[in-house]
Amino acid sequence: MSVTTMSQRVVRFKNNLHEEFNKTLNQRVNQYFKNSRYGRYANAEMVTKTIFMFLLYFVPYFMFLLGIVESVWMFYLMAFLMGLGKAGIGLSVMHDANHGAYSKKKWVNKVVGYSLNIVGGNATNWKIQHNVKHHTYTNVTGMDEDIAPKGGILRFDPNTPVKKHHKWQHIYAWFLYGLMTMSWIIVKDIVQLAEYTKDGMLKRQTKSISGAWVWLILTKIFYYSYILALPILFSSMAWYHIVLGFFLMHYVAGFSLAIIFQPAHVMEDHTFENVENTDTVEENWAVHQLKTTCNFAQKNKALSWFVGGLNYQIEHHLFPNICHVHYRKIAKIVRKTAEEYNIPYRSYPTFMSALVSHGKMLYSLGR
Image (cartoon, one colour):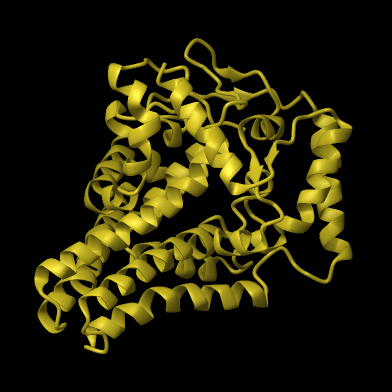
């Protein structure tokens, strides 16, 4: 498995290692779906969840847009609920679709995947950063953009330089997490698409570069029009409440997304590969995923439902093309197989224990 970067560099994994583990795991998962009456894709539970998340986002929006909600405090409650809905769409709906895991029909995945654009993001960028770079090269320095925040304000990778301000990151990181989606919609999507255009990644992922830019611009105009312009023009709320509600919505969504994704990979006992002087990761790709990823709160059904099964990050990274509603079942297979082959399978018992470990890792990386 390999990907060419903008410098035309290729980094490979030693997939001749642990071949038997790979073979056995895939056989067992495939056999599970053969024996099960459930397919690999979305089921009724997933469709119900999709409807719920969109309602959680759009019902509060129309309530204040149409003047049903006139109280300022109720308005901010609606903004808070929209933030949860926005996070839910990202975690539970568009995520599966943009992995091709929502439906066996490509057009369904494409349409549902564009729900990210509806809530302000950009599906094209997301597929490159997340599917190609992060999933292929999890925790590999210089390849995984998820551990390389722009500007160096946060340090997620022990193979990168420590700066003076990093010693406080275990405190300020939690505040910055809430700004994540705001950064995406205002700056990151444009900067990122420009980078992917320049380094050739965009050309490899889409038929038309100009089409990708036009789609980015049009969907941004659409988003800002309905989320800011229409409420300012037609709702009973003052413009500054609309702007503050917009910020609150994004802060809730950004914080929710960050505290789910960051504890999955930036942890005390995870591997971070440095390939600066080599073109090879000294491990089988699947085993590398197990060494750089962890689960948490696997018994917490409510959390698992809301976060799209992403507390089962190990199963997601090994089988990203399987809809998350099946992760709970195949997790037993993955854990058993990993234990048989003496390969680490890390899982934190609670969500809080995972957050604590992540906080300790932030502290350590600051030093």
